[in-house]
Image (cartoon, rainbow, N blue to C red; front, side):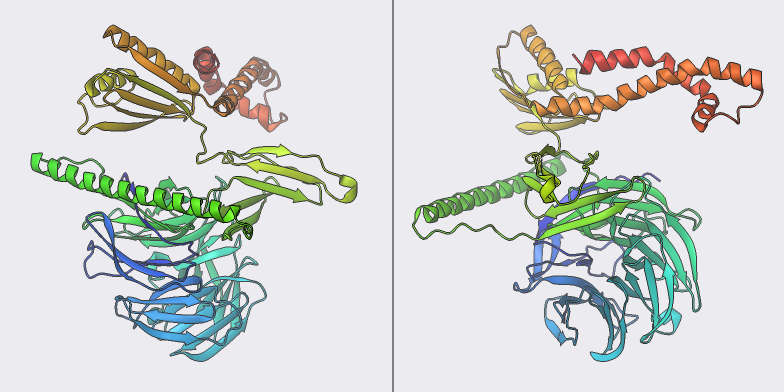
Length: 624
């Protein structure tokens, strides 16, 4: 079954930690659920969605950073009580925001991981595990390495308390009381744990883990020894797994696996005949995903995957279609609703602009005074330094709640900096004195507000909305012939050959076209000018060309040209290899590369027949 999800943004809170957003349960299968989220400002926010807008249920006062948020309640009842960890303290709130618990633990460190099961509370600092029952100390364990997460197998199925610690040394530690029962080795440092299918499976013993290097695995925690069920490797070199959940987003009675990664990728895996999961859907967000859960949030009857990001954005991937069939009255209602949203956004933008101007004037006035002191604001930085086994390199990842302008690197040991596909920053090196132990001085300059340098074409003139729309219909595929409702419209296109993008925004008397491919802008300019000339319309044309977009597009073309060159070299070897095969009768002595060429000879020849057309297309359309 094909899965189509559309993104919707709800609201933004402060910076969030891992596993600090949950959906409150409801009685109905697809009834609208409330969302509760906690941030580094110490604020716990509970809200619901009405008519597409976030409506607060309750909001606590600011305080110290919240590191975890869990739901709890009596076993067998809806888990609707809210528990948060703040420093070494655990607080509890009802679903209406009334605080009923303030438990100061005996931990000397900040609580890093938490799990709630009935009256049992499981807490972990960096290396210390504590188990409390009705806020009374029960068990204690000191781990040999850092604890990343904790979970407990369902007591109602197992019959006894079985906590499992996810530790940085690539081990799951299964506890019994205050003692270690046994250890489970996993292929990476486990970052997050959850019960398989949300309940531990039929026996309550199945546990899913996600690792810092992006792997997923299922293990059965038996009484004596573990049973590894399956493992998904990270062949595409994606980010580490920060959050997981199970939810039946397809509505077929089988729960899908929802995965959120620290590089902003959301994945949905389906299960066929209880076998290993199969990737069904993926979507890329701009930030690391700290929490993920399936439910019904935006509109009753439509399931969605709700995510929270590091900078505090709460976003959903909903099954509700963006476009739908409506009657005349519904169309008017929809337009009025959209106009209200646009109006509210404009008012909010004006308020923000006014606030920025006021703060800027305030800063300038204070800077001109004699006692002014300029201070660098403190930001919460999310950084990670991970080893890549395949190429023996390290990946440095940094994330901040504001835009990054520059990253400065200095090292007292020799370092080679490697470029990656995801990187859009420009690197420059400075001279350094190796004799004094300074081997590297480098600066990464991040491109402002975009990962794709953009060229802009602006057309103005005495033309109607219908006329400019007809020109766009003539230029670009799959644009509806009917003039859109409203005063203006925006369309987005992606190049099927190079994956470059085009944004078209136009209205009566004005059209703006933005693309990271300068050839696209040039072609549009020629065609639109020609169409306007046919109708004797004078156009005023202005450009804003980004020189960096040329290098960006050439980098996209380079691997395609390289592929065509390699293809030609392989084809040249086919006849000689076939003669050698005919003469020797056996080609096992050949290196794997040559044997592969022989095995794929027919496909290579078929592809080579198309090469002249590919090269001409690359040169003619993108290299002139």
